[in-house]
Length: 209
Image 1 (cartoon, rainbow, N blue to C red):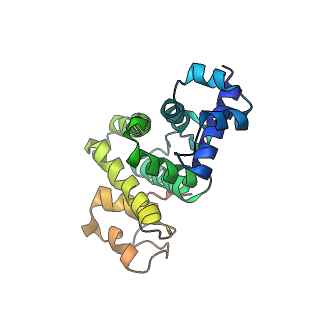
Image 2 (image 1 turned 120 degrees about the horizontal axis):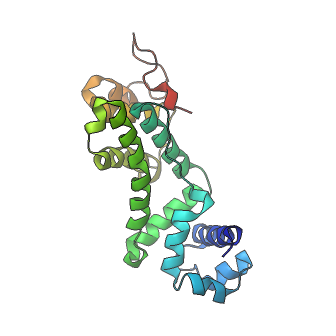
Image 3 (image 1 turned 90 degrees about the vertical axis):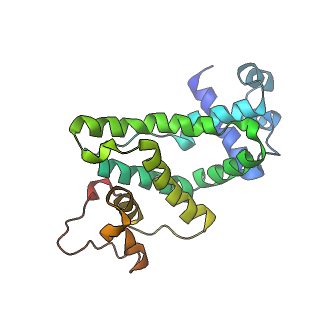
């Protein structure tokens, strides 16, 4: 199948997921929206879960390239900024919430494959950091990424709170330096001021958008 036509199918799948939810998502609906015959879709993806799983990993709406800022701290901050954009900007935010809701009630979706694919790509930033000899690169990558991404999910989706400027920097500092460093506590002391501590010169600022 031509890549352009495949993207049209994936985009239609995620668009319908966000608009109607998983229960009302049908391959017939995807065929109508994408302009591709449903028999063609079934030939490539034999079921709705298979089609949605492929769309989540390959659709342009959720495209992902691991950042490369030159430092692990900068890469992690850029990564967190990417998660913030994903979860706060339509249509990706609508897709993410709908996919999460579907995964809770439909384990056959195997949403874990999507996160495993993302983690496989994200590990590259830790591998580069190890080559550079950065001490923080010895940390457990999965633990670090779960803590950072989880912070955004909880703030933006579960709490429904705005993700203020500087959140990525503070979150990364809290994970890499520990909350006792003071930087991680700034969210409780004048959220969103964007100012560093006295004597600091914007630690990891290269990763902020």
